[in-house]
Image 1 (cartoon, rainbow, N blue to C red):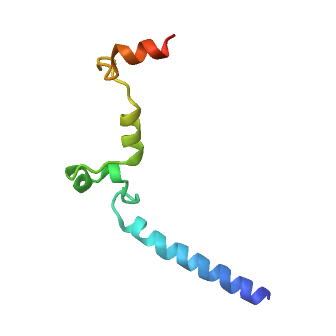
Image 2: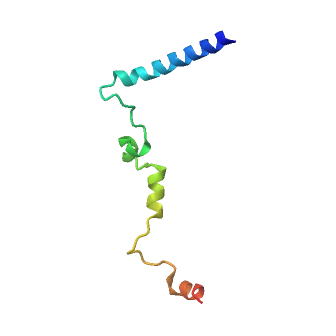
Image 3: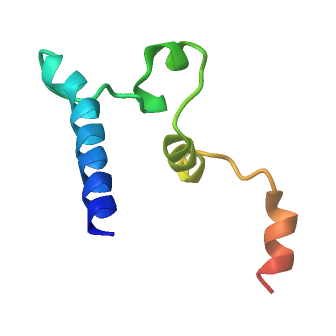
Length: 78
């Protein structure tokens, strides 16, 4: 039992070391940025991050004209 546990831990450590080799080799030593909002190819296609799109959709424009008109407002303001 202990032998199998030790073997599993050794395999996990080897896997972590192999995954970190690319970080050690890179000049900056950082993971590549794979976020959709920072990808230039996605930006050229007009595809953005969901969080950025949500923030833009929730943004209220102070200069916007009400599309509902006065009739709607008088019915709801009684």
